[in-house]
Amino acid sequence: METNVKQDTETNDIVLKSARGILIFSKWISVFAIVAITLGLVTLPFTYQSLRAEMSTVLVNTPSPEAAGMLALILMMGIVILLLTLFAVNRLRRLVDSVGNGSPFTRINGTRLRGIGLAAFAIQVVSFVGSLLGEGLLTMLGETKPGQDLNISIDASISLSGILLVLLLIILARVFDRGAEMREELEGTI
Image (cartoon, rainbow, N blue to C red; front, top):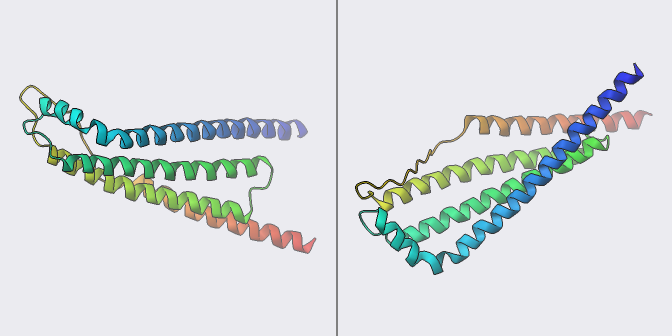
């Protein structure tokens, strides 16, 4: 019996360590992407004329200056999505750390889960608005010249799985809150 408990703990440690490693890697990928998109956004005013010239080789009509503003807005929305992702990854890493420390049922973990759920909801909303802007940008750019193709397709929809994730996280946050209440009650009776 004692061997089974020890094996389960070791398995959980490997799982938690792997999850923590994946979350740290995700954090740095998000930071790198934020920096890259920010650099692209900052250089957009300086590179717009050359970008416009390149696009005019593919498009029937030369893009209007408003297209640059729309592109900048889409890039900013990408940064917002990455910041929300970074927020959720940091909260999840702290939650994994508390599970590894043996104290998962705390009020702060319920708060962390709620924060992750709200971030997931905000990502859904910003992604939807960004995809609508992307469709608008494609419409603004117009038709391509014969023999040229942009090969860009945008799906402006709300993800059902994303909504279910938000609900799951909020319900799970309530489970953690209840677990913390039960733990406090138990500690109060001892």
